[in-house]
Length: 213
Image (cartoon, one colour):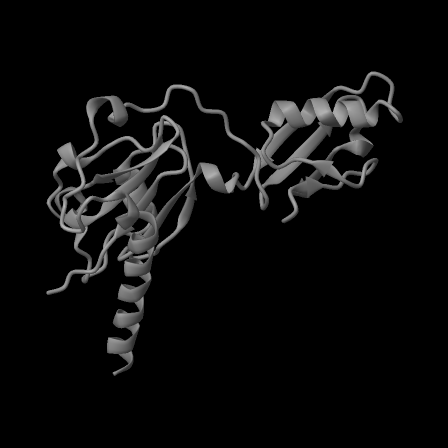
């Protein structure tokens, strides 16, 4: 009874996500989603990692070791250093944050030279890749340059026994519009068909439905 309730709850969650993200853009609920075209399958060439809440950043101040600290990016996106309590970090590249810290430190340190090193990558939510539904471990994963669908499936531990992987979809922002494409996860994960592997983009969402049978 408990197992049946759990499966029903997961099914309802996936159905709700489909309804919210997919169905409004479909002419009919039975229309299949197209595969990703060659233009949309290419890896994004330009990608800069943006610091996000949960990242650990090392602020290294040249010739001032007493000011060098490793601090977390707080949930509000800011960091606290030994000289300045609140510096906005989220949404910036490490180089941008380093220049902002230099500016903030200029009141206290003459000609401060700062480097920022990021550890424990989390990133901003809109650059993360998300997997929901019948993955073994549904997760939000920081995007990595040249990341593929297979890399992501390894991260989430593959598919559950109840997954209908070949009916999974990928939701992607393409040229400012949200597009939905079919992906063949059963072929990729269970049959080893590498032709089903595709490059991922920052912000991609994979939804894996439950099999009805």
